[in-house]
Picture: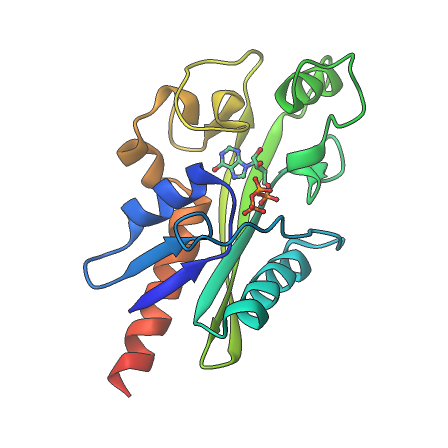
Length: 194
Ligand code: ITT
């Protein structure tokens, strides 16, 4: 099964490629020669994922999927959430999104958080959504250089390390993205068997 992955984030491509079993291949937008900044204008991960896959399906007519992900924190009422990629945009006092997150959580008792991924698959013109979540806590300072985005400050439940201190294989044992990919694989496998 070959799918176009409607993303411009190389880290997502690497993680999903590693998570897929044999027989599944994905082509990133860059590899497909599609230069497109896909919009994320909606208030939910689901709607943004649908938008991204739909834009690329309409452009190519090929089976494709996208994913929208975010980090939700309890103490900040779910922020950064759907705005995870743009959390500190326009706020030069913060060196990064992670820097802003740590600043806003400073002094808060509750550091619990959750990563969530929503995949939107369009196959034979029909859409299906798959979700994966990972519960954890936000560290007091960034630790490790692995992964991307908020990985150095996210400690998944069941570990003492941040995602930033883990190899990709270790992160996959907990990963929100991997859980969503597993559901996608089950769906596609069933579809192929019909
Ligand atoms: P697309 O081209 O796929 O839209 P993007 O980087 O804009 O790529 P999102 O809108 O889904 O993707 O942004 C999610 C942001 O949340 C992402 O840029 C990271 O900062 C963060 N994020 C998502 N998954 C993460 C993970 O597994 N580890 C750390 N940070 C993550």
